[in-house]
Image 1 (tube, rainbow, N blue to C red):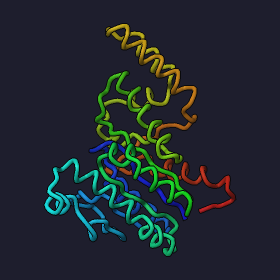
Image 2: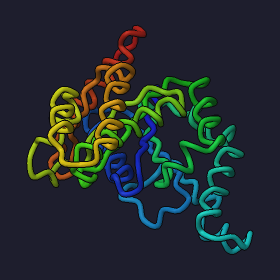
Image 3: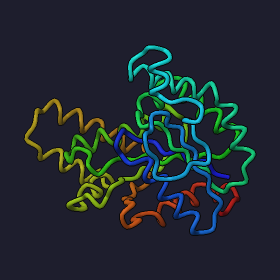
Length: 251
């Protein structure tokens, strides 16, 4: 069994990719379960096998605890952790090959609050985990923006302590492949930065950040994915397989 959390900034397409990739795996005759852990979701493009909204919703927390939307989202994250033993017990009972976890859209609430990292620590104690981190293709198409995107991916991996595959989702929106090339080629990105007409301090900071990325970030490529034509799905599956076949397991 492999647990695959879908993580990324709001609007990056976590829910749509989780549902579509789940269909792709099912068509390959794998037993797939989808867990929705987003208590604020109004609509899901898939039928979840576990839905946190059956227990509580962000809108209900707002009314019951008389707090605002942001505080309710934080409270929902805390409640997910309070239910973590129940959630994990249900996961362990299933005979699924893959459990796809659709996490809350507000990345900063889950990834950078203690409850998020504690939940992931519990998850990794019970089963193998490899996350998918989404960058939206509609992210600011500037060289500094690419640096920020890669730093965000690294920060989430460090904070949650889990392996991550980074994907550039909604690739059908790309007007050119330069975005993907820049994410996968630090030297090309460095050249782009040095040619920018921007504050020297900002460029120096971006270049220093790029050095850190090159030194620390695993030499794993960023995959372009899209639910429109299922671009990158085979490559994404192959990477998941590669990460864990070293353990002696094959899907």
